[in-house]
Picture (spheres, rainbow, N blue to C red):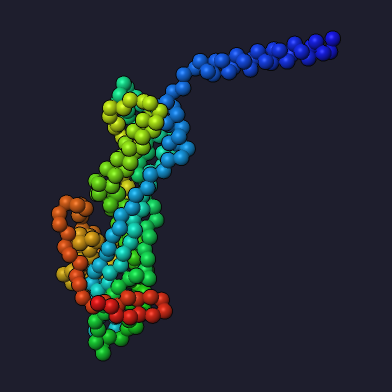
Amino acid sequence: MKYIVISVVSLVLGLFVARALWIRRETPIDPIQVMITQMRTHALVEHERQIAIWYRACPEVPGVNPQIFIAWPARLTYQLELDDIRIDRTGGAVTVHAHGITPGEPGVPTDFMDYLSSGSMFTFANEKDLINQEIRKASPVARYLTAYFLLRDESLKGEFTHEIDELVRRMAGALGVPVESVTVELDQKNATLPKLPHIELCAGSTASVNGYPFAKAEDQFTVPIAFRPGSHEPAAMPKGIASVYAPEAAHSVR
């Protein structure tokens, strides 16, 4: 009797397993859901901007104020996470909904900072200390520009939407889903500009990023200058003799 009960139970379990497999085989797989799952699990879109900043600083020091021309590179980073992406499909039209672009921490390789300092025998300040002061301003300036490019650089959003468009089309092609158009809608929140750090710019001069003036001195304050990247031809970077400053050494280059 015991073996009969075990056999019946095994048969019933076998029927349930067979029924589940049959239903699973008969239920069509939604390719859009497959795309959503894959994008949420694996996809992260990243872009960056390579920039160069240069300006002339005239710091207040005992004696005669020196003039310091300083230039340094930075890498602005941005990313778009797709962990909450939604995809709607109507015929061959696909609409992708995602959160907005988020800025990352900029990379500022201060070992490659260039400077040219001009003072006099009546400048009673240590040149290395003055350069270190400017180095400490580099990361806050880069964070300000990271947020500013996110607000003003229209091509940045275009690059992200293009990446998603291409990703959706490739996945749809692999799954055999006909796609005529892809619309990407980003729920972009307005970025908050951090405060631009004080730069002791020389009178009548500006600080520039890739040739676009972004700050000027006004009544001893550093005042932001509005600009739109790509809107006009930027000014060329000044050329001349500079010094490459590193923590342990400095040398001149042309």
